[in-house]
Length: 175
Image 1 (spheres, one colour):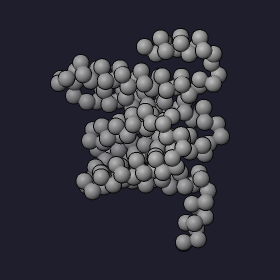
Image 2 (cartoon, one colour):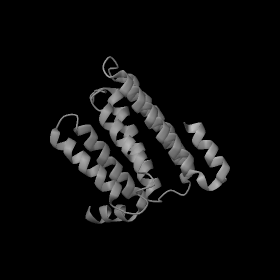
Image 3 (tube, rainbow, N blue to C red):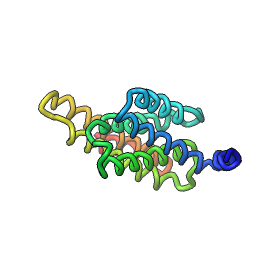
Image 4 (cartoon, rainbow, N blue to C red):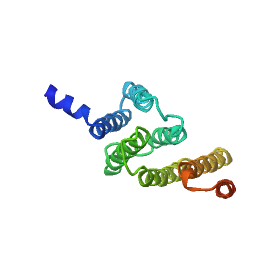
């Protein structure tokens, strides 16, 4: 058993999957226990910052994923099929984000594009599932700001393929 775990930890993709399973499991159990909630917060930040290279590049995407997972946690019941799909989806999102950040995947552009599209969906899901009778304008402007950040990060990820003028135009399109 110990040798099998050591062989799993040698493969970067399997190590990433194990980290994503731990995060998804702690997110599920944080619905029931405050201790699991605190463990989830520490584990998310530990797994994101443990290899310290390229953490600045994906920090805003990481924070958006982290906040949206915490915001959607009380809105979706853990015992339903939607809850199981919710936690399986966050397993996939944590897996993609950590894999893109840690340079595990070869075709990172396609996966990061999928990840950003899913972040758009999560932000809209948080916006439309929360109570908008209080502080509507604040929630509206926060949603707009987060969508601007996601779109700008998506353009910044593909900055290598664009010229300087295209980057300037894309900033105006983002806004």
